[in-house]
Image 1 (cartoon, rainbow, N blue to C red):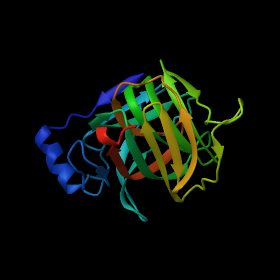
Image 2: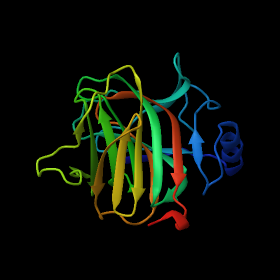
Image 3: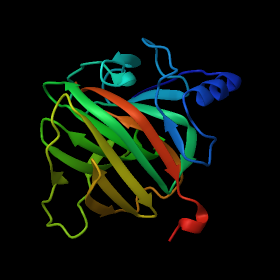
Length: 230
């Protein structure tokens, strides 16, 4: 496991946040990557990987979305999960959404959202896969990934089958409230999961798998205020 933090001066983070359309911590936050330098890792994020070689996350131009964040390394190591973790938020109950586009990958074409991230070996993740045409929620605990069954499903269920065409933009969302997590794709609620492994606040971020080359845009983080918690 490797974990490389990208140093960003506090003043620089504040300036970039305003230019990128972010809000202050504790309020709704949207990161659209428009003001970030192309060809460089995104400031204000930490790059990590669960298993395998180091990941490559860079801001790129995209003809359909201008600036996007892309994971471009194509290491085919099984069980390798590149991570790009946002440093500006830590919380437990939160709604996180992101637009993504699967570009390439022969082993996998995956895009995921991470929340309650403790470190590169402990977090929740929901991912969509364009090769498998499904959406699945997992926990990664001590470096081991385990799928979590949707509420009310049969014991061998594995997320939900849904079309995820390569080369098209989709929106993945998770709503985390206590031990219950609701998952949506393109505005359609797919399923809920209940699990109590990680209850402490943690960071949120983005995730891919193995040789997935994936673009991300419009990362939105909406903390749940105490008055809204149930």
